[in-house]
Image (cartoon, rainbow, N blue to C red; front, side):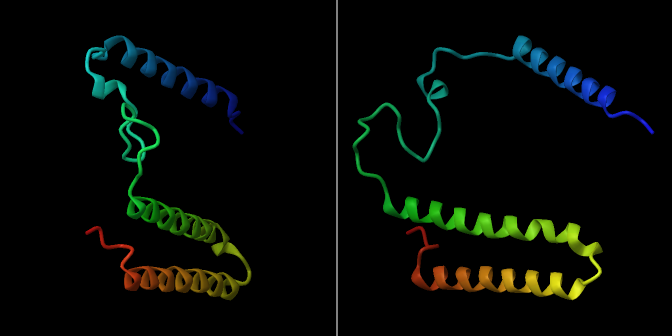
Length: 116
């Protein structure tokens, strides 16, 4: 049986070399204000921090997080396909998919997915 330690060491070495190569050969632009600013949440980091933000943006973010967590619950079901009781796995996946679809229809009818 092959030991995994040399493989891990080799991948660490290769990734470190590629990272160092990218840092040495990359073009750095320190003059532009836009390239130095972080791009997060649609906010301009150079303006006042207490300016109001779009509530629509906040709602879309929350909807994304909810659906992302529910989809993350579906991912381990592929590993459980080797279980002696596939009916339970199919039923669980079906329930999770129904919850996702009902939530999507509900948000669609409320108009939370329209960006106008």
